[in-house]
Image (cartoon, rainbow, N blue to C red):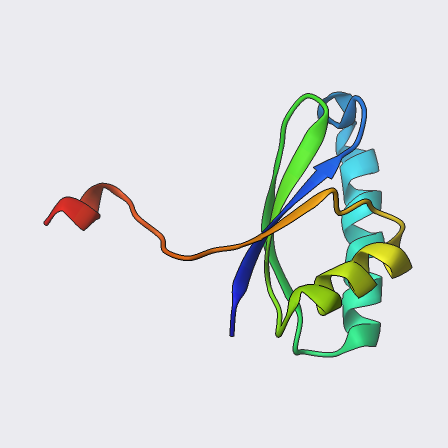
Length: 90
């Protein structure tokens, strides 16, 4: 199944408290549970004013549906074409 990186522009998200991040995660997970196992959230990177979320989903439309239902923006959705790391050179 394809893997996607979702860029979400959320002003000052990097200043969120642990409780606020827990609430956002709970909201996202609640929608994911309703949508079923075909879409999975792996993790997110939180920076100053956006998040970069990594999902496994059947298509971009599933990502957009999750964004609409959860209330989180999906400003840019990119399909992962390859994953490299330091071991790739071997």
